[in-house]
Image (cartoon, rainbow, N blue to C red; front, side):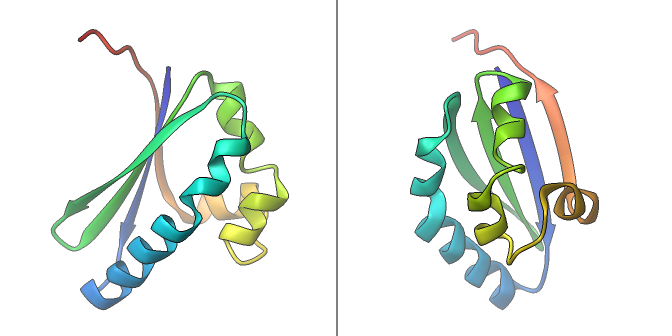
Length: 95
């Protein structure tokens, strides 16, 4: 499994808007083969969007897509990912 954690730091009113946007558009990710799910984690002053994918390659189809550009206001994947605080992990679910 491949896990991508996007940490978004902003004032709480902005984080509330971003949470709503994630909730409104999360269903768009279902069309990507290998998409396993997404969770929103709240931290003090930050929102962590944690997505799970079957493989790294499955994840990389998303930032290369038109859906990604729609979600990120026309930014290309490479550009958006360099501006974000993203960490990626190979993961294993054991229980």
